[in-house]
Structure formats: structure tokens, C-alpha cells
Length: 485
Ligand SMILES: *[C@@H]1O[C@H](CO)[C@@H](O)[C@H](O)[C@H]1NC(C)=O
Ligand SMILES: *[C@@H]1O[C@H](CO)[C@@H](O)[C@H](O)[C@H]1NC(C)=O
Image (cartoon, rainbow, N blue to C red):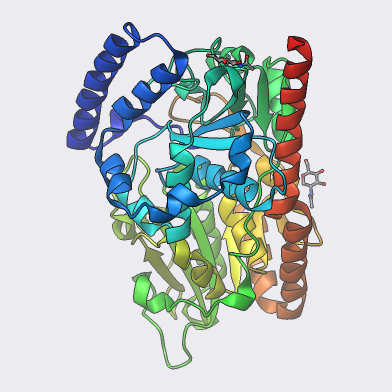
């Protein structure tokens, strides 16, 4: 997920980051050569790399509460340093947050402390601002926790290209190489049928490799990652936050821009399909539009809302969709196209549940997912879900809790660094059938939606997954301590 490719970032911003990173790197190298203790090394690195905009945001926030939280657990010298793109808005970030919050809230007697560090992607001030106040305070508290490297397990939670030595400018993980820490875990995932050689080698440098699903266990091992290192650790979903009983729907017409169709009539919006994705080929937005436009027309009292954001592209999605539809050469139905709206404003994390709440069904004919966060968020919100049954989502989609889109064809990745890999090619016709079905069988859809939430609560609730993660970490500490005595 989220292969950051700096070469395609907007010019000015990437140049700024690039230059400031080089300066930081030089300064860090200079300082590292003249310090003696490892603790100091880390603190120096931290200060150096975070002396940027976000850091000043962190500093300007009130500190009274953060100093006093969590005093009892500081008795343990064992630490976990969790490094992830905490301040970016991608999939790794939301995944990392979900682990950190789960561990913080649900471990009764933690045998280790947790400290966090941003790494692996660019920071977004907008994303940080959209986080809940308590989350920000917790982040600051964890960020300030000090740990000795020789008593710390590092979790590098990012794409392997960001691991030490990183292939692009970012604080490396582990920060000073593989030898200074008690143990190093790589947490990653991938969306195609294989892992390339460079990443396989990076995985094998880790002591353990955590992946989210059985799909990944087998694709990583088949690609050459040492099978004794690979462990499945599923993702938590915050089922208390994504709880449909707590929210009123967001006013979709206020946030969406009409792209196709003639607007809402007297009857209101009718049946609302929602899709949430970054604007890239992998997400199958082309398949979704083809299926939707061929299946429905202006008379169907149906609307499709696409919450999307730019991914190495400009954000003029309305025109992109209109161009795409022109190229399709469809005959516009007599009663016009069915409604299509784009939401390209940033929807703050705290407003996301209200967005799902405003929809009747969620749909994502993706070609491949690490996990598919929007899918599980929609399921936690009791929405009936149509999603491709391939890659990460095979871990949780069933006939009973959703409408899995069966895959009988694969296609080759055509662009980017993973050209030549294979991923799913979801069928437009099968998707049409499912979309029509979910709309015309509301009772069945409701049952599946509720089952979806039940399964999320049972299998992926924060307390469930926190225990899985803590058990793994404690096992590693135990092993290491045994070897020392
Ligand atoms: C880690 O190093 C410190 C000194 O730098 C030492 O006091 C401590 O005992 C070490 N911890 C372990 C587990 O070896
Ligand atoms: C989804 O995919 C998994 C893994 O290939 C398979 O075991 C399962 O039967 C599929 N589910 C459906 C409903 O096709």
C-alpha cells in the first residue's frame, strides 16, 4: 500500500522536503560521530529530523495533561518503538494509529512502554489537524517516552523501501541500523501477487515480518521471505468509533459535487452507493464507473458518491470522470445518466463515520489491497459491502457478511515499479449484478450489513487484536531475556 514515489510529487514541495532532509541528514551524521551513548544518538536523531513544521505544532499544544498520563507503566524498562507514517493520511498511517490506540487502551498490565516516531512518508498538517484531541495528546505523550535501544523492540511499519537504509528521504527504520536494538520487526503488506527481490531482501534483514493476512503469508513466503520470520497479525478496526448507533448521517449534497446526471429531484437522493479510494488504477474506479453507468440510468433513483483524493495526479476528478465516460462511448440513456458525485474535500477522520452512515451500500471493485481499510470501516458501520474477493480482503469477506466479488481473471500491472506483477481483474458484469442485487434486496442487505459489523467486533475489535500484538511482543522479550541469562 502507498508506495511513495517522490519523483512525482509537486515540484516545489518535494524540493523543499528534499533539501531540508539532506541538511538534516548531514547534521545527523555529524552529530552521530561525536556522541557516545545510544540513547543520545536516538534523541539527537529525533530532534534533528523532527525540527520541522509538525514538530512546532506539537510543541505549541498544551502540555499539562501529557506529562502526567500513564505513570504506572513507566516502571518497565522494556520498550516498543513503533515507527510509521503517523502524520500522513495513507493506509499505513491509519493502520499504525489503530494498533497504537488499541495497545494503549486495551492492555491491562502492559509489560512494555510504547514510543512512536514518524517515518516513511511526508507529513500532512491537514491530517494532523483532523485527528481527535485525545489522539493528538496521546501521540505527544508517546512521542516523548524515552527508551534505551538495547531494551527496545522496533516495529518498522511501512513499505520496505523506507527501512534502513531507506531508498528515499525519510528517517530510517531502525534509526541506526539493525544491531543496536533488542529486536526489529517489519510490518508491511502488498497489493499484488508477489514481493519484488529488493523488498524480499529487506524483509529478510528483519528479525520478524508481520503481515495482515493468510494471502500475504503465502505471497511473501513464495517470493522468498524466510517462512520462519513471517507472522500473520490482523488489523484492528475501532468498532467503538465506527459504530452506526452513535451518528447522524452527513449531508452528502453539501460535500459532494455533481459530475454526471441531472441533479436531485423531489424524491431526494434515493439509494446511495459510496466508494472511498485514492485515485489510482489499482482501486478499480474504471470498473466501478463502467458497471454503474451500464446498469443504471437517471430513472433508477440511485446515486454514486466517490470520496477520493489525489495520488500522484492532479485533483480535477470531475473532468477525469467526464473524459473517461466520453471515451467509453456509451449511449447516454434516454432518461439521462444516473447521479455521480465526487467528494474531493478532505473529510476529517472524526467525520468519517457520518459519511458511511449517509450511504446505503459500500462498493470497491479493487484490483488488490493490503487490507482494505474503507471496506472494514464500512462493515463496522453495518453497511452491506461489495468488494473484490482477492488479496487482503479475503481475510474477512464471506458470503454471510458481505457481497464478495468473485475473481476469475487476473491482469498484469501496467505501470509503476511493480509492472509485470499480477493482480485481480474484477468483472464489470458481475459487479453490475451485485449492485442491482443489493439495491433490490434491502432486507437481505441489511442482514449482511449487521453480520459484517458482528464479525468486525468479534474478530478485529481493538481489544482482540491488542492481545495478539502484545503476546507476540512479550514472547520476543521473553526469548531475548532468556538468552541473556
Ligand atoms: C542497556 O544499556 C544500559 C547502559 O547503556 C545498561 O544499564 C542496561 O542494563 C542495558 N540493558 C540490558 C537489557 O542489557
Ligand atoms: C474468497 O477467496 C478465498 C481465497 O481465495 C476463498 O477461499 C473464498 O472461498 C472466496 N469467497 C467467495 C465467496 O468466493
